[in-house]
Length: 376
Image 1 (cartoon, helix red, strand yellow):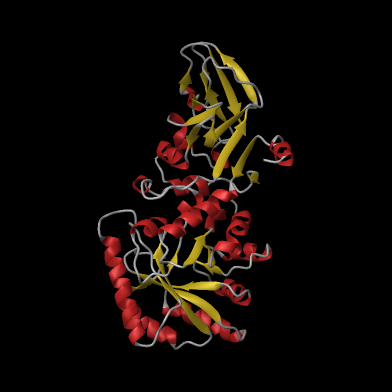
Image 2 (image 1 turned 90 degrees about the vertical axis):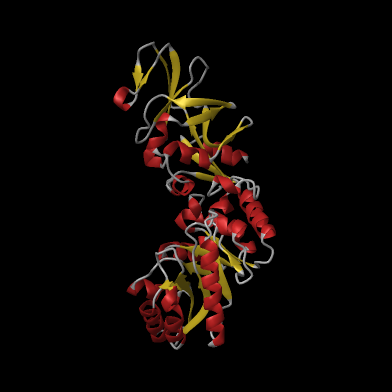
């Protein structure tokens, strides 16, 4: 960390640090695990899972085929920052958004004939050809053409003008599970590809594997992977830890704004849930649920200070949390680590998710974009 970064951090009460080398190392590890899959679509939606869209894209740009985002706004943000890799918009766009997407050469997802026709008509009006990836619903039950109608629908889409049918894809609802459902989906997907090939319909890219799918659902018909959560060093399921070592990239820190000595019997926080059984040192930190730290974690959460774990003193507030340091010394402006490594110990995003009764995805994607982020 440079002197300038250290100086800048000292101006903030709460901040995030990102190790960009961990992102690139994680991607390389995933690619080594699945060498038969040559193309990579890096999922950077939701502000790159809270890690910062632009800096993440710049770090990975030389290693990926595509970046995938969920909205036109995210795609435009990448273009405005001169990210030159192709951008795929996973989400459904409407009228004026499609105009903008076509003019900016973004690749679009298609889940119905009507959607494809609208993109075709708008593309034709601008004398443009738009690349699309057709999504087939093989069991997710969300977006996508139902697989039972996919052949007939794709034959009709294939006849539309000003569209390049570049990719075909689907999505696993239980990639980390051993329930056999993902294998069924892959069989359906493979049968669909064979049927379409017989009709002269081919796709350059064929993809289904999210992070868990890369590790557990390799198939020769797939030639593109879609790493998301594991790209950032976070496991979507504990069962995957033994499969591949990845490095967490994100650290969340805060700085004490006030230190107090509570007498025995004194309380702290809304609801007075914390009551000191003996005199204790507490400190207040300017991070709360408005920053994205989950309120439900308050009764179980821990933080790190100088390599030692401490628990919260009462509920998390909108803008603050209070930590019980017992008899240990704590001073104003002392740093704590809420997510990340400190003194040889580590709190993972997965830990915070467990304390909150939620999933790791929610923890990182809820971290406010306005929290200062420092990259190294």
